Image (cartoon, rainbow, N blue to C red; front, side, top):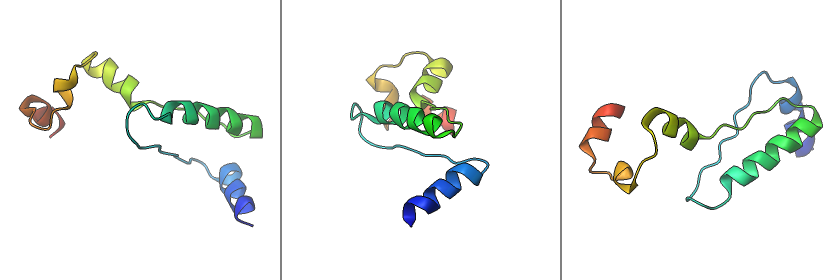
Length: 79
């Protein structure tokens, strides 16, 4: 019954966002690409989106200092 409800939402909803969150290097991108291929096989339009790629396009490749909570410049950019 639950599976039929999930497929109902996939086929008749206009947009659905599936968000994968977790620690770095744990396979989120891999799983999202596999899930996207599976949904396309079912006939559902899907496109994976990586926030890391978007961030690299905006700010360029960053060192570990970019992610430091005490980075005042980054704080000013996002606030």
